[in-house]
Length: 143
Image (tube, rainbow, N blue to C red; front, side, top):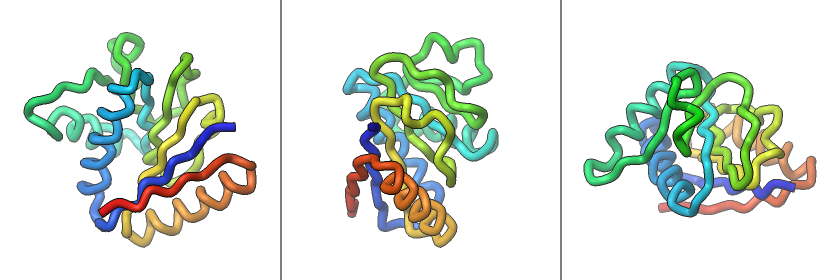
C-alpha cells in the first residue's frame, strides 16, 4: 500500500499551490526519489514547468515535460497523460483533480490541497477514495 501525504495550504490561488509544489518537488528530489508531477492537462504541466524554473533563483531542479527528449534522463518529470511506469524509489505528486490509474505503483504519493472550492471538493473525494482502498493517508496542515 502506498502512503499518501496530503499537504493542506491556507491559500486559495493556483500560484500558491504551484509554489508549494516546487518546494515539495525539491525536497522529494533531495531525498533521492525520482518524481513525476501529474497534471490535469498540458497547460498546467507547462505552468508547473515554468514555476520549477523560477521558484528559487539559487537552485536548479533537473526536470522535463513528459514529451521531451530529456524526460528519460532527468529525475523529475511533468506530465498529463497516463502515468509513466515508476522506477524503484519513485514518488508521485498529483496535481490532477482525480486519482490517476497506476498511482499505487509509486512508493509515495503527495497531494496538495488549497482552499479553492474546486480543489477542496476534488481532493476531499480523493481522500475518501484512498481511505476506502485501504491506503495510509497522512494530513499535513501548513501555515
